Amino acid sequence: MSGAAGGLGRGPADGPGRGATVGAAGDSIYDLGYRGYQGVRLGRAHAVASLVRQSFRQSWGMGRPGRAKIVPFGLAAIATVPAVVALGISALAKQLGAADMIEAASPIRYETYYPVIGQVVFLFAAAQAPELLARDQRHRVLALFFSRAIRREDYAAAKLLALGAAMLAFLLFPLAVIFVGRALLAADVVAGVAADAGAVPAIVGEALLTAWLLAAMSLAIASFTPRRAYATAAIFAVVVIPAATVGVLSELAPGQVVGAVSLFSPGDVLDGANAFVFGHAQAGPPSASMPSLAYVGSALAMIVVSTAVLVARFLRIEP
Amino acid sequence: MALIRLESLTKHYRDVVALEDLTLELEPGIIGLVGSNGAGKSTLIRVLLGLLKPTSGRAFVLDHDVAREGTAVRAMVGYMPEHDALPPDLPASELVAHMAELSGLPRAAARERTADVLRHVGLYEERYRPIGGYSTGMRQRVALAQALVHDPRLLLLDEPTNGLDPTGRDQMLELVRRTGTEFGIAILLASHLLGEIERTCDYLVAIESGRLVRAAPLAAFTGRTGVVRVELDDDAARLGARLASAGLANRVDGRSVFVALEGGDGYDRIRDAVVELDAGLVRIEQERRTLEDLFRDDGAAEGVA
Image (cartoon, rainbow over all chains, first blue to last red; front, side, top):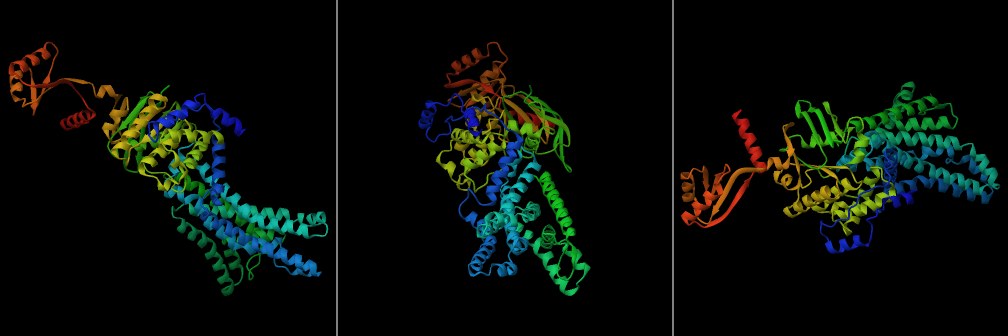
């Protein structure tokens, strides 16, 4: 389809004479390389898709100098290290004939993986959400975006989709490594896949929840400042301060209060939701046991509020 | 079909009036929008783009209501903002291609149009370097290129010569003029410099404090005045006195005499007077009004009223 579209853009004026004009005019502004466009115009959906693709690449530093790739890919590597180590140990244990023992004792498995890499996931959101928004406000590029064939809410939605997809990839990659690794290590590959397949809905479900929540929350915060560093600090504060409060409170005043407070801590909420998707009815900080479903409810509420704030911000912002 | 139609368009920012009851209909062409800083030029352009909601009244671009069909309007319009709006980390080629896609062009067509348009504005090898390293002149060209890349029906240019040196200014205006005349793209050029408008446009809209001062073809502003300027190579006082005694009202200014002619044999009488005095005649020319005169006159008229 893109080939056909390119053909449409090529007008009859495209001939050898055009090149001669360039040569004659040199670097002069009087050169005429201009002709009209009679090809297809795909409209808003195409425009939004293009913005999503561009923003997704931006969130991984693609198409930028190497510097921009260090943080996202470095964090992704760190998030994958536990998976690789766990697989290595499993392989070793298998050679030594102690596979079952290691399997039972390993702290790294599907249901514990997201809580283990939680901090790295937050770091990714805190570092890359401002990457997607700060420049457009700081250099007033929003004026160019908002004067295109999209709406303001499309801009917000495209950024959310892009960062959400980037985070989904970030979260699912290490678990995919474990999944494939375990299948290859199993005596019977088909049986190995079948044994792990049951965990897939939980893995994907929690990844979706985490990606959407953290992407929406960090973008909503980042949309209020053109300064990258401030945004990163603010996002981290919103995650760290409630988590620390929950930690301190569980020491000082264990009980239901801590449980209630933990419903406002994104880290605790995601851990609680993780417990729910892996079939645990109870979750929460050590001193307070809460129904794990409450955390899923809290996560959904955070998603709704963050998304609403993000869209509202771009509806009001002066480009 | 009207290019732009405004119906009692009003925009207030809290207690500041930016646009007051503008009613106007413009046909396609190269239209100058002139007014001092803060007259409401940028506000009007941003309302036309659907970037700002008017307080009351309506605005139409190519018969589309900007408030309700903003996306359709913006797909047909190219906008060059008054301020610098370019991301420093992207090369011009990437930015412009991305902007083309955001206007609905398919990917391959966007790349091709980007190459064409950057060539049109005079950017060559530099297009692959990040914009952060460009000169002001180059940045303005990129800004124009991104406004043109989707082949709009209307270009909204907000002070496109901002920050340019005289050469850059001339080149930009020439480029705008050619884009309007040779490619049939309608242009609304906002500027606070009357000279720029006079050189580039064929229709003029003057606004002041958000109100319409006048909208008319440029010729109506700069038509002949009925005054003839006679320039000598020496002091013109004697000629002035001679013409006055011959019944021709005039004003002497250094080596020139400005004579009001009301038809008839005025030119003959000037010639005769010059011959009688044996003065060195440099030239006789029709005085033309300039836009500055218009604003001066209006100011004076307001002062009297």
